[in-house]
Length: 424
Image 1 (cartoon, rainbow, N blue to C red):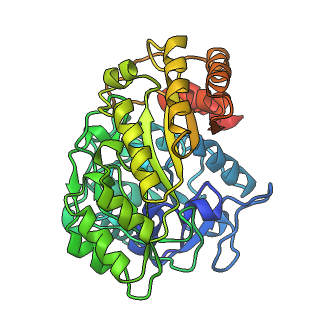
Image 2: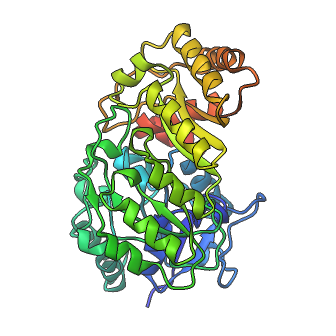
């Protein structure tokens, strides 16, 4: 039996906030786990303290493009070559996957010998069998290339296969490592569906037909005795039985948290139940700073929806509203920023407001893939305008424009440009 490790190039708490990491650990086992250490030392596994170089195979789970640099650094610090092209056959086989493959699988292919493109829930066994049954590295790559969805450049060339979607029977993914803290208040996480019925032009998920997990399966996935549940998905508030699920969890004595919900899908009854379960912050997405830009993005959420949301939250005694918004969008002007500032000031008269602001990064496999990136200088100017427009009406948390620029460059990088990023 080969010795394998599952590695995520993020901090331990963040890795265990990803249901993909949980699903891979359950499906690819037996294997150990490693995450990015908080000091510049080689990663070591949680189970035995082994380094990445001690294993025959490294499975990599990656969600966000800049994590690629953490992966390269982790490999170098472990005495391994950071690129597929430079890696000798004596080093571990590296197989990658995760949400980042929905946009640009070539990112992981620059490092990994094989990449699974899309959802691998149903394919974990086939991937493990391919390497367990191989005579040598070359045979393992040939076997991996036969797994539908596996991208093996050394065998099949540089054209990645289409995105694979797992059959609904293999859903939902849920927490399998129950004692690990996560970014959802250490909740037991369970997904309610994948894909999204909306058509937002900036989002990779909007191109994936929605599939909702039956409410009975979601409820059954959460063990009795769990006191906090996190409902996860790209379109949680579009689940046709969301209210019934929340009601059942509240009756069990569970507090319930969700990834962001759509402002136009919120009802008084849903907020009453969430408040009864202990929810203190309601999270919604505006995405575009103005009505015109939201329409251009096909984000059918209006200022009126957001104001109604704040009113309903206040009635339910949920006194904090967190809003996701982007700046640097195509066609954006100072007037759009001023419109957002005015909206936030109105909302702040009802509830406390927190803005989570991200620079717009055009992603491959979206309608806005070829849109320009605003650039660090322009983004800094927009953010300064936003802070002045909002004033003291809201707390503002911003993703760094330089990080966003790196995300943009990696999102669209191929070939030599990508190799330069990995060697630095």
